[in-house]
Image (cartoon, rainbow, N blue to C red; front, side):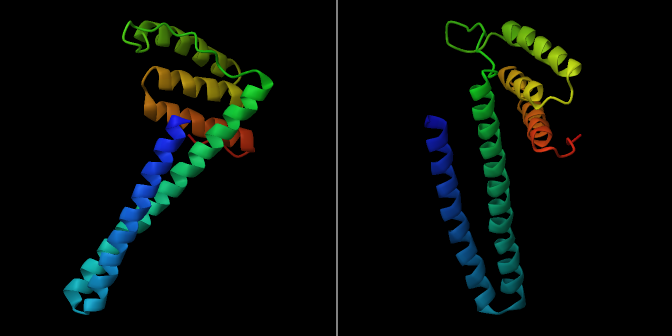
Length: 150
């Protein structure tokens, strides 16, 4: 729940920022000189790109949470079996051993979105966020019956 609140607060702050930047871009365009209109258009592209990125990220998080809920209802959500350091961080060797099992499971069933979901969690636990995201994108695509991204 704390992560959702943090995400919503961050998204709200970004939207306010995009509105403020967008208003400055409009003000520059209204000034009417070639230079200010050019800068105004350039400034307006930032909120557009930011809103697109925020929208795509929100879609991704929503779909990943839906898969997690479905997997939880089936009883297939990965169990936290990782060893932790006294400070609470995940032990690297423990994460690597779980990752090896998840990777083997995914290699045995490459078309199963559940395996890709669990592999994404293992990548995340191993602190490999880019691969975790790609594995989750593949899980979402397989679940939806779309071609998996490469």
